[in-house]
Image 1 (cartoon, helix red, strand yellow):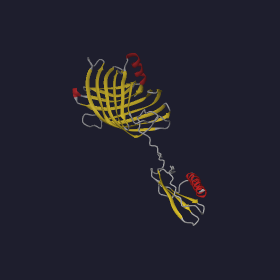
Image 2 (image 1 turned 180 degrees about the horizontal axis):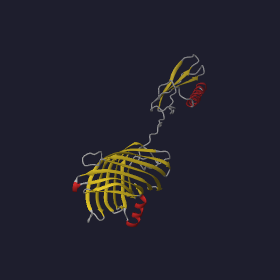
Image 3 (image 1 turned 45 degrees about the vertical axis):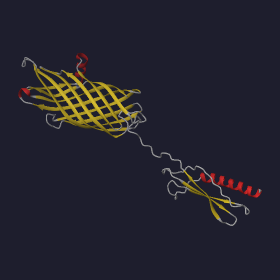
Image 4 (image 1 turned 90 degrees about the horizontal axis):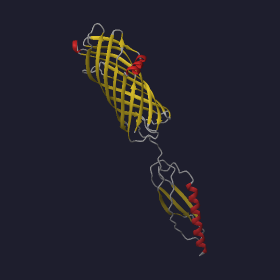
Length: 342
């Protein structure tokens, strides 16, 4: 009785220590992915009776393959050198993700780039100089107003541009809406020009490169949409025109463009946007070109300060005689904005 008992204890001990030792060894790379075969050999005393022992265990596999099974075969060696399978155990390997895939995020996204709806609301002020030619009902004037003159006008007469920029989207797609209203009165000798205008743009964008609020991150969007213009121009040459000559014109341009942002520090990034439009389609502009460059400084978790420079070129003429309208000018100057993210 003692001899079989000792044999059984020796078998269990041998199986236990053999299993521990084998679990620490890397799996044979020649085996199929997700499957491991481990051989255990146990020596029985010559007078031991054949014993069958079934063992259940979990063996984590050192493999990035999908979860599968590992076949573990235990073989007992008797004094007669006869080998027989004792137990076959199916083992589920531990599966863990081996590749991290970043999630898309919006232009002003959080550091962990969550995939969720987002929105940005940013009121802004734009003070610009104006250079070029304007015309109404056959009268054409040359306008040359510097940025410093525009600053003086903004301080003294509250002339300049105010706007509201809104963005919203989910994942890699979104919409941009921007409304700008401005009033400028540049003076050039005996000529007086008074322009009141509103511009509204509605763009869709698609994110071709995702970026988060981490240093070195880069975001790239492609843009397409429309921009609507409404200009009301009053022209008067002192001593020639008893009353101002007024002409109002409205039109819509198709525009395409792109924008990019580079995050320099955790709370500081730079951005640039460019678009062109018009293309002389129908009553649209012959050409428009818009370039915006600046920086963003995050003040609070959901609030940022923006500042930069905007350059807008508009070339459009329509009608003839009393219906003639001309705007071939460049508007360029600094802007500031305060944005909130949701």
